[in-house]
Image (tube, rainbow, N blue to C red):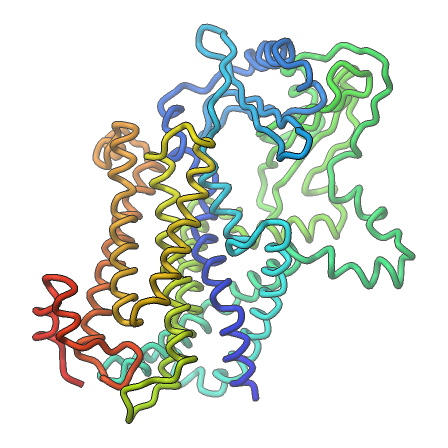
Length: 533
């Protein structure tokens, strides 16, 4: 019974979880990706906070409507400029984002529509590519199913865990090898997967989980009770009385005095010019606690401190929720933990990919060439969705460097790049034999991923060796990992072709030698070298 539960829950949730895990492994480096995606800011010295108030004054003079609310991003390792972001509300349309900074000459500069590379990959992580309005809830349900699959998998494998945990029986039986790898990775990374399943469900459908308490226990008042804990301070209500705004440097100094040790990263302004003007300073608090988030809310006119939130004064529920988020995204332990989470994300994606392949292989008709339609369809969907996700994310990186600035802006082209490549990959997988589609889509993944450092060099003039020589480690790491991943996809494509040519002919992965030999020049050589089993 548990084997059936594990199998079917894994199949239902596996494809969405592959996208979530593959995108999630990249999302771990969201902050670092900004150094790669915005090459116009590379090499610039950090701007002084003395420019913060002149920037605010220049924006409010040019755009008085921005006084209702804007965010000031402070200089950091990923963005050396002071950037003011204003989200202009529009009727019957999404908010229009404006980003401003001051040039070295002190002139106000509005930046063209910026890349949303990191934000788009993050969106794929929590929606699996579905529309944002309801995709997050679908993925929350998927996380619950993911937890069920983990539990049933442990119950199935636990009796033989001590005997076969480290067994990787490579040989003629490829199914046994894949099953060993699937079980070993699943059991060794089990604690992290429990965290991912649990925190993923809480962070996506946590509000829905509160519904029974909201209506049956707290008489509809629960959200009102916990809302103050979920935000730094209540949104201010305009009084209609004019009041001056204190300089940004003064407000920042008062916030840091109220929360000693806080490293400020951004400042949120609401109702500038009104006596209710509120400024919220967000940052991180140095320490060994899992949760290091901190914030200070002030009145922007008087400078009075309204609320201070630090790791040591949070309520138990707030600290738990924020700590769970930190555990989910690996925002602790520095760069070493980020690389651990990156590897765990890729290993998780492999779990769902290999699980589907094991299901397909387990339903193979060993004594007939024609395989069941549902087996063939699952093989095609697995290839199209999983490899389409890989190729689509590589296309986002390419669009970031190669897309034209017009026709909707860079962010639109990045989104078009992902969904265009993803949908074409799924269609291609459904139209082709699985062995041929797997080989061709893996080649596509290899080519698109290998083109990432080339596109970066072409757009920014900084190739792989130059970024290494100049010590731009974040940019170098993105390009180097892309080349390494492209080499892996290329080898997987060759292995898929060899399996199609020399593997069991009674399989959805079988490929006639004559048909494959005309596909690529090296196919004939692979056919001669492939073992006949």
